[in-house]
Amino acid sequence: MESEKRRKMKEKFGLRRDIFKEFLAESLGIFVLILFGCGSVAQTVLSKGAVGEPLTIHIGFTLGVMMAVYMAGGVSDALMDYTNGQFEVTGANATANIFASYPAKHLSVVNGFVDQVIATGALILCILAITDRKNIGAPKGMEPLCIGLVIMAIGVSMGLNCGYPINPARDLGPRLFTAVAGWGMEVFRAGGCWWWIPVAGPMVGGAVGAGIYFLFVELHHPEPKTQEENNVQDKYEIITMS
Image (cartoon, rainbow, N blue to C red):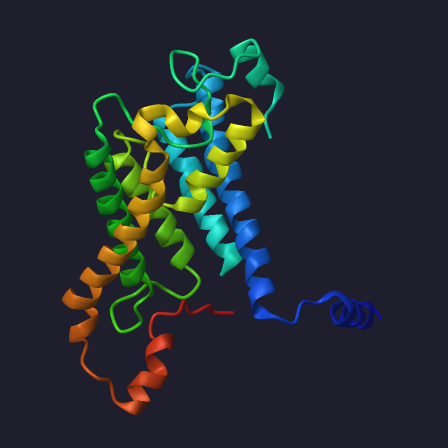
């Protein structure tokens, strides 16, 4: 009876077009990424480090990315207490950086762009290695965990300059939110008009990382025999003994 109701509901409300299914899954994934990632930043900033630190931010984004991959494959009263109702983009009481990335004082625009190209290139390079079934690869179902650990590695090694946005969706959407939620257009002017760096840099870095992996690794894979090609996907699957 339950399965019959589910079948009828799926027939009535289920989406037929793949693009709409992908849109919903990606939207939910990005929501979870921002929820965990920016939530860990908010907890650290608003508590002035009492219940958070850089490592907890890295962990928050790591878990956010991991769960977002699994799914796709608001401002609390504490903010008002912290800022006394003044939403500042820069300065000691800045809170716009809870939601989007801003450059450190030592970082120039050019260096920031290079930072994003390198960090995103490293991310894509590692993702391709993790999902490459002709390489060692990762066990089936463990790919999101491995990708999350890559995010943590990038955070602990390259997070000093600007907080490693390495994803236009992670940075531009929250920045638009802050622009209309009280911080104003200063979120686009701050840091020497920094906002475009986390958008353009990851796009270039993604292409660079993919190109490097193709030229250095994928291009040189030997052509497998037919039977081996059919079995290569199962080679590294986790075997569960019942």
